[in-house]
Image 1 (cartoon, helix red, strand yellow):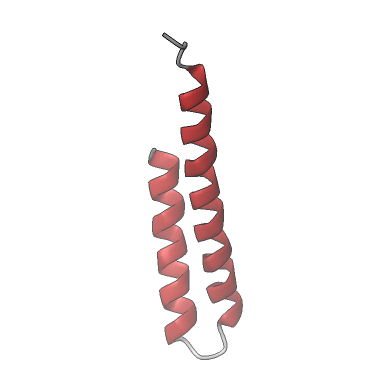
Image 2 (cartoon, helix red, strand yellow; image 1 turned 135 degrees about the vertical axis):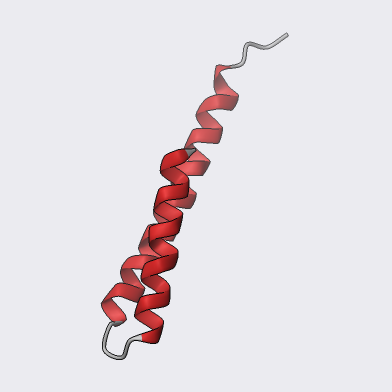
Length: 56
């Protein structure tokens, strides 16, 4: 969960910097990609945890 929070906070910071500073659109796109990576990480983590539980 800590990795998700770190990725998300870095992504939010990059999106804000990329949106505010003129000519920094590459930071905005990197931030958006990091948000996607963070969400995919959370999805994979939740799927892998749900498959480990034995069926009753």
